[in-house]
Length: 173
Image (tube, rainbow, N blue to C red; front, top):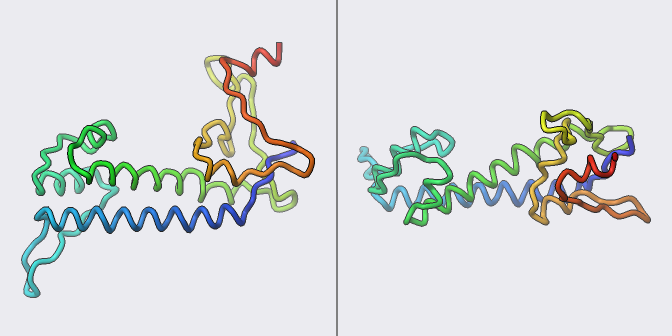
């Protein structure tokens, strides 16, 4: 009921920096594809072939066109890739996930009266008997300090995290 205070200024700054990371990664990836030969001839000379980095089909076609020979664009394949584009693609996806699932999602959950996020917790929400959280899910907040720093404790209080095996059930007991 108390809710979680959130620093909207830090959240806005994080959004700007994450969008910049995404754009920077896109530019580098598309340059690597162009330098690798993923281009076409037009009346104006060579130009890059448009590629949707969010489309596994487009991405696989582009990677194979520059000689990488990927069988999939899954994270495990990109991690094993012996080409710098693999790491860039993983960074791009990670930043997009952070932006879409957390940075852009949190403002919709801020209560206009309290200025806090009031997630729902359920002690029997999961089949395993563990706590669950939704609207938003506060149990999946990334560990990166930059995202966790947007949550601020009220004056005289501290925010702590506990990650012990079934600690919620032990506390209830």
